Image 1: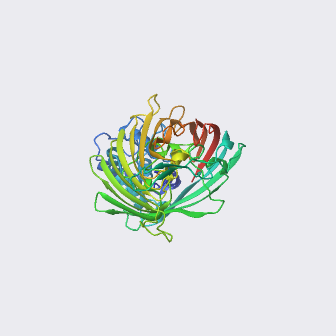
Image 2 (image 1 turned 90 degrees about the horizontal axis):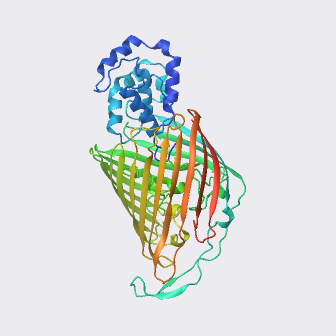
Image 3 (image 1 turned 180 degrees about the vertical axis):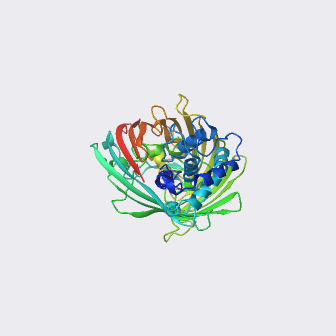
Length: 513
């Protein structure tokens, strides 16, 4: 399940449609068919038994499955209204924000969705009492297991720096009355192997609602075998983790509405991007974590911590959010104290069905260095910083054509006290996805860009490396629950020096349940 879709109830459509077929003899079809006259859409007039390929509703459901990542094979087969209702309900069962087309689908099949609960014995138990367009007051479980095989040429040149040298005094740079010292990085340690290695992830997502409009989310997760794929930003895989084969509570938060247009989120373990007003990228990274969200850079870099967020969603496509994350809230440093490590993000966005524009301002204190998923080593040690993440994306009306979805990101950052003497930095990312090209639900992905690098050093002649990073993959599904993704990636000067050149290949298999 994609990282912005962890609140969805993935795979629910499959488990719903199966009992429908098994219990067809218990369904009063005449009674169900009488509900078809309640259709409220202007573009669809078929009766209960005939949602045919080419109908407005059929194409919209297919687009919904692709855009929301639901584990259902719609292809070009006809659907009953009952099946269509099951798919719509499962794909949108816990989505806080829907498009106009998705709202029309909910309205179109609202009667059938309601009928699922009232007429089919056993459906409520199997689906944990789903209600049309909302979450029930029970708990549901879905998850995934991931096997990853891969190797990286040039991996042994990567590694964390041991620290900084004594440096050279360059004068009072920031005007605080004291002389600053520019420090240079020393030798590397913790080098990675270039041999073939195997990693795995096992993850379970639990969602619980108490009112039908709120949601308590808990993620249980374990992983192991990614020691050769955790170098930031060069080879950190999208699925990489450091669970050491121990299942832990990896994420936990609670979301609830405040009125009709405001949503609040609070949790002891959450990243800032789960609380954003709008999705900053439609690119699906299947290899490197660096290419998430239009570049996993200054504003959206992942770091699990205590989080608070408010999101406002207007009816005309505009949305805004403010989020606060604190690493010290669960320790002795305390929440938002001088000793705390924290980050504040403010996003303003405009989103339509086909395109999006957003700007996110971030200010960070106490070496909140999560942006290092997409930055060089030279700027990783800054204590205080602020910056902007500008994002835009476009996706075509139809998949399966030569026209891809395009996601673009540009980051800027200003440093108050960069230990290497850099005053600011910038980076960019460009990513493309083609879907349904050779078979239903397949995806081609290509992304490239420059991780954020330091600029305008206070010492003349001192420059950061010129990093470049890329990935390419093809993912396909042999069935509804298994996805196979071969991919390659590489880059030059990706961390700290000109020896940091890499080329890697991975084969990833994801089992969803």
